[in-house]
Length: 377
Ligand code: SAH
Ligand code: SF4
Image 1 (tube, protein in one colour):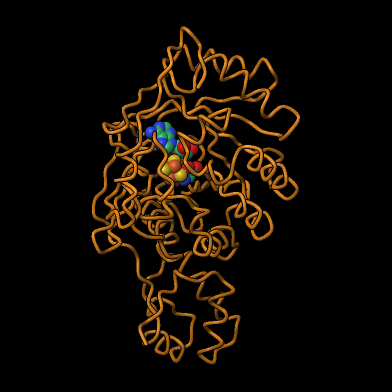
Image 2: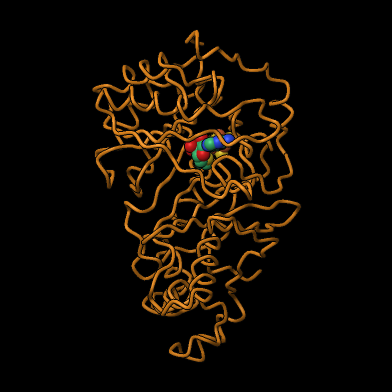
C-alpha cells in the first residue's frame, strides 16, 4: 500500500487513520498539532509521541509538501510561489502582507473549467482538481516558511486570512475543499476564524448550499454583470445557474454565514460592464434581495483577453452610484501586478486536458459598448 500523505486529513480523518493503526484517537490530536502548528515534516521530530507509533507511521505515512518551482517577490512585498504538482501542471499561491495581517490566496484546481473571459486561469483550460493535501500544503508551506524567515516566535501566526481566490473554482472541487477548510479552522491546526477564511465562487449554486450546511465560511461571489445576457457571456456558468438562482442561494447562505453579508466581486471591464446604466441595473438586481457588499476589482489585463481596464474615473463614478443607493462598496487595491500575481493573472502551467482553451478561442469576441453612449448588452 502506498504511504498516505497526512496533509490529506482533517482531524477527523487523521483520528480514523490512527484508529486503523491501532492507536488511540487522541494521538491524532498530538500528531495534527506537530504537523500544522509546528510545521514538522519528519516523524522523528515528534519527541512526545511513543517511539513505537513513530516507527509505525514511518512505514505507512508521509508528510509530503509541494515542490516549489519558483518564487517571486513584488515591489509591494507580495510573494508568489509556483508549485509543481506533477505531470506538467503547476499552480500558484500568493502571500499578500498588510499592516496587521497576512493574507494567503490559495489555488483549488490546476486550471479552471469555467472559462471566464476576463480570467487568465480560465483561458488556460483545465487539467485536474487539487487534492486536499495539495490545497493544505500551500498554507502549510507558506505559514511555516514565512515564520522562519520573519523569525516569528512559535505560535505567532503569519497567515491571518485565507482567500480561496487563486487558480480554479473551489466549489467545483468540493470534496477536496471541505476537509481543507476544516484544517484551516481547526484550533489544533491554523485556528483561523470562519470570518477570515473566504471561499470565492463564480456561482455553483448547489454547492453554495452544501457549504452553508457543512462549513459556513465567508462567501464571495463573482458577479461581474447585472443581467443574465451579459453574465452568461462573461461567466459561462451563468447559463446553468442564472442570476435569480444565484441570488436566492446567496440569501439562503446568510442564514448560517459568519458575516451578515455576501461580498459581490465585480471586475471592471472598460466599455463592457462599467457604465452608469450597468450600475443602476446592479442596484435594482440586489435591492431588498440579499444583504451584500460590493468589491470592485479593476481588471488586471493579460495579453489574450482582448479586454481593458476601466479608467479610475469610471470606477469611481460606478462606485458612487452603488454607494448613493446605500450599498457598501470598496475598490480592491491591486497587489503584486508587477509579478503577475494580481487577481486573474495567475496562470501557473496547465495541461488543458479538457480542451477548454479551444472552446474559448472559438467564442465570438465580446461586444464593447462605448461608455459615453452608455448602451447595454
Ligand atoms: N473561481 C473563483 C475564485 C478564483 S478567481 C471565482 O471566480 O470566484 C478570484 C477573483 O478574481 C474572482 O472574483 C475573479 O472573477 C477575479 N478575476 C479573475 N480574472 C480577473 C482579472 N483578469 N482581473 C481582475 N479580477 C479577476
Ligand atoms: Fe475560473 Fe474563477 Fe477564473 Fe472564472 S474567474 S475562470 S471561475 S478561476
